[in-house]
Length: 160
Image (cartoon, rainbow, N blue to C red; front, side):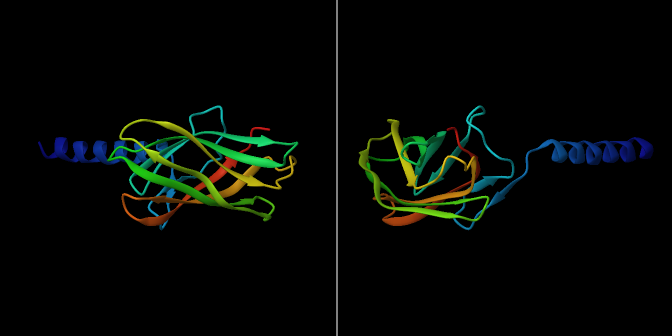
């Protein structure tokens, strides 16, 4: 019986170690969002964030070479009560260390409970030679909390 207990403990420990190595690693930010450690491309489902009680499903990272803009396209949902939501002040950094910003409001609408809406946030003056971004960050405000919260995405491949 003692040998069986030892075997069971070793089997459990080994199984947990193997599973942990197979699980994708990620990093948490101070804003409480999780950042994937691998670059994200539009071919795989991208990412979901929850900020200020609002759910943001990132669907696409689209570049427009003629306008030199990069746009994150979302499906945004409010699971709580009807509320006004504002997305603003976008900021991006490429892997060469160059910064890009765009102030102003990108989305300012009332979201109804559990009704998804399309939304986007853009940054300008990004040349088409930039194929991915190290960081894309913007601010979300919701009447639910009355606070501004930063939303971050990292390691994003741009679909030009």
